[in-house]
Image (cartoon, rainbow, N blue to C red):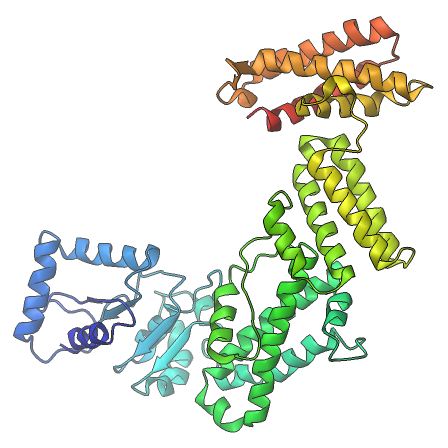
Length: 484
């Protein structure tokens, strides 16, 4: 009866979804019955569930468990002498105890929230009945019971107040990253302090640890009571400050970091406890091809160097993503970007020059300019990629670079013609052609024959069989990406 009342009250509150899972009123498992006698309301509840599931208690239980494990609802399952064994839902995080449990039954219940799961730091046990005082005795005797795993009980219970004691150290370690910043009010200096990628990675990790511990501490009445309000306010303020810093450096240096496990938790924590900072969560970085949106993002950034960094690192991210589609083209601009960033970091160029070079490289990548593409290949981007591959091989075989480019242009266009003949059908790529070994074999032979007959023999280019095989293999990898 109590379980059904719990659900009624939760439904009235309307904050969480819940379901009740009980045994048939006359078939209850467990040592101590939770019922004295079945009320009419319990019987009506049971009948409604059996009507819904064709009179099958197994279907009723299986359906409810699967929903809890894999769907968003119900968020809470209210159970009576159920799911103490054979129930494995690793994402289950909270266990509310409202009745007496002892020995192995208590250990089995605790084990339900002690499973490891992505984004889950702890299993929380809220004891409304005072049963956790039985835990020591249960642990002393657990070895005589074989129906649960011993590893589930390792570090079985940690008081929230004890975990909260780690917060000052986590706070200190976070600030320690910025000990070299002379003016603690100079916010751009914090970004500069995180220019090194390894340092940024350490900052991201330490901020996540700090945020999780602060969240835990704020949930503890004991911690809130014993900690001076001024200290609590400082912890909250610093969370907002460092969260905003994380966002700005992530944008500035185009870092792709997996925050899925903690992003929502941190944002909820900020929304509830931090009001002095505006922290705007982002899901993904704006691509430089979204020109208008990217320009709006850059315009909001304070500081010439910060804007240059944002453009340079976002362009570098795009280059890395596209490198395999046109290795020669993107490799050239990747090296230019690295040299430009290095020149600024070594103070060989000014902030203004850094910004100018970053913008020039961005424009060249966006519009594919400055790459010395022959006129015959204008408008043929895939052929240009093949040209880049062949030119890399040809340029050392000729004293005159212009002649090498001319022959490479013919080779690039010819390879593209061959590839299109093999993989396109009425202008559209054939289905899954890249997975068909026979067609790939034909392509290798066709490109090899073309390079020997129409390039090597025609122009006297000293191409070895190794050179030809390498050009063919690299061209096919590009074709797999570009003709999909």
